[in-house]
Image (cartoon, rainbow, N blue to C red; front, side):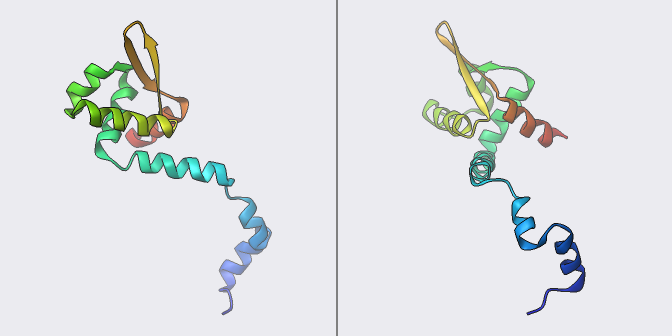
Length: 112
């Protein structure tokens, strides 16, 4: 089946299918983005990200706002950490969670 002329013209400007393919992110970047979008597909995790966009928080404050059991909160925080959207830093007996630079970009895009 032939390619429609406008598409063919635009495709030629980027170097054909090969040139178009080169414009895509590498596999590692695509895998990370997929993981990040999955992490943000849950309303609880989205809420956590937006909370941390306001300020770094300890688990006790996050738990109070999102109102989930400790085990579920731990799960959600781990998903966000694995997606490189948040990081936790130990301060005495507490772990203070904050957004990573990647998390800041996603949060900024969400609140627009």
